[in-house]
Length: 150
Image 1: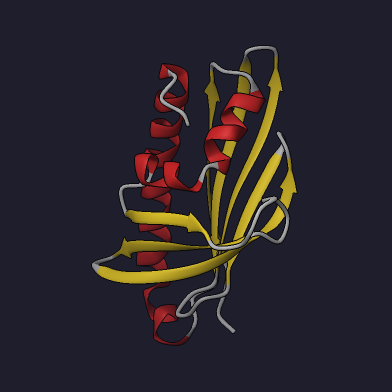
Image 2: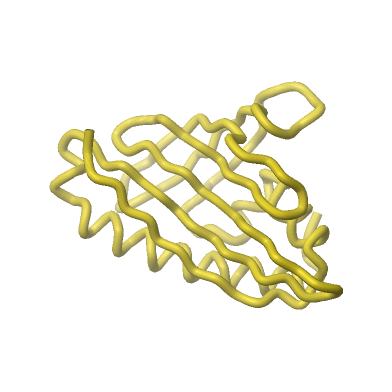
């Protein structure tokens, strides 16, 4: 078992928490804010929530991955965590929202546990994950504030 790293960014979004959460909850929106994601979809039947499953098709450090995931934590409109146990590095993508009125403080984090040969690349993986989280968070805020949410 490899070491674990977490990269987190936070920002103020000028929209109520329920609007921000609704945007994050829609799987197809991920391609709008994460440049490395080609598609994300739910694979389980409705109703969606804790235990729902899906798949993300993405690129990371020049490689293509299909990452099945499960909603591991679901507390609308406060917290959403997607967990993927896929190799070569299990990941957790989490959102925590705190809001009052029309303003939401959004924390976005990615936690990964590199295994196998990926352990040797941990510093590169962590740095790339951090850069991606910061860019994605800025894009989420821009899209939600502009009303470009589903």
